[in-house]
Amino acid sequence: MAPDGHTTPFYTLATMLPILVFPTASLWQWENSRDYDQTDTSTMIWTYAITGTIGMSLDIALQGLLSYGTAVFLFRNDAKKYIKEFTTSEDKIKDAAHRATRREMSRRWQYWVFLLIFCFVMAGLLEEGLKYLALTGARKYGKVVTEQDYITIPVAAAVGFATVENIAFAYGSYKSGESQIRLTMTVLERTVFGIPGHAMTAVLIGLHVLARDVKHEPMNMWQVLLEPILFHGCFDFMLFALSAYDGNIGWVHPKGASNICTTLVLVVGIQLSLAMVVKQKLECYSIGT
Image (spheres, one colour):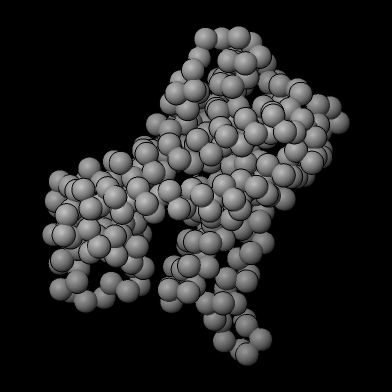
């Protein structure tokens, strides 16, 4: 309970902070528990910090510009309306007429094209590209020596980016007046499903760069990023598509047992598929085995 005897959204947000920073603490504990091939601490910390601040800020700015430009191209005069609805908190959608309008908007083919571009380019390409740039920068300005470093550094970038992003989302949910249940759900789902996904695609990027630059396998930048982008884009598109199919613009939590179960099955399925690919490649390069 909050000090005043009532549970408030701000108090709920405060109690969620340990969950939000748990992945960071776990990464730090895992790195320091190894007595061999430890990554340079300074390089790891700076990668985490810069990616989570400057990197995330640039990513958000680019996403905003691309989102608006794509919306104008696809929706013309309705662009601002779509952008507004795309970012509207689900707790603000209570009027039946409003729901009907959103359902009609979600049925337009232009919206599905927007979702594809948003998920695979604005989210997938930009965010996975940021992890790639973080590893590139760490190799140039820091110390990336061992094969394990090619895993730890991009994962540090991913966790830094995702942690700050999750804190921003949670704070945004609080400021928009979302209920305590919605706020808690936002924190848990983004921590339990979001950060592991970010970390695993970061591992793929690290392994691909290792294969290209250390083991001299023929691979260009797009080949390095292709799998991470596809997994990232498919994960996001699946969530937005399910929400749109249910008559929503943007992400709205599924309602009803069947919708919730379908969403969970698809989310877990994509995560397990990604985990299997990562495991196979780790074994292929004899890392962590």
